[in-house]
Amino acid sequence: MPQDELDLLDREERIFKCFQAAISLLSPNEEAHDPDGVRELLDFLVEEYQAAREALMDRVRELRRGCTAV
Image (cartoon, rainbow, N blue to C red; front, side, top):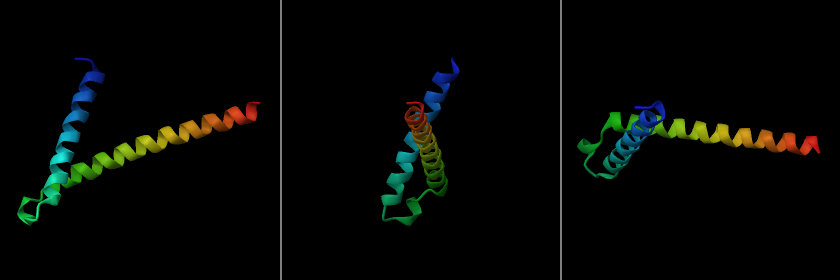
């Protein structure tokens, strides 16, 4: 299986686990909370934030180069 397909499957699995962690956080029963799931949720959010921020900064740099090249 190609790497991009493996990456997609991994991401889908992580998103599913994050949904489960978020749902457990909403449970009034503290015993239902899953610290490992919450950790996975936070790790995933950090990675997604960093990727989005990097893409945004790349876009800003492109725009700045375009403005100075005129």
